[in-house]
Length: 68
Image (cartoon, rainbow, N blue to C red; front, side, top):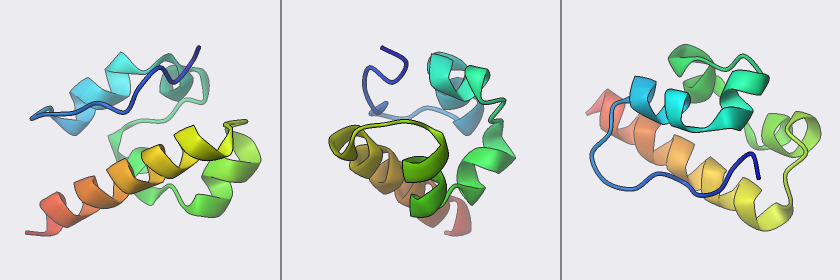
């Protein structure tokens, strides 16, 4: 599976990107990760709804942490 889990705990964005093969396959780096939208995740990444929702929530958490 290309997205086995959404990483938990304190990891840098770079560590997260490097730990998920799907990001490497799609050439997603840290900046691209923070720019992902629901539409992009659902349309281009080929994920089922459950993993897509988890990924979207995780990206939103990263955006919130980055802005604070």
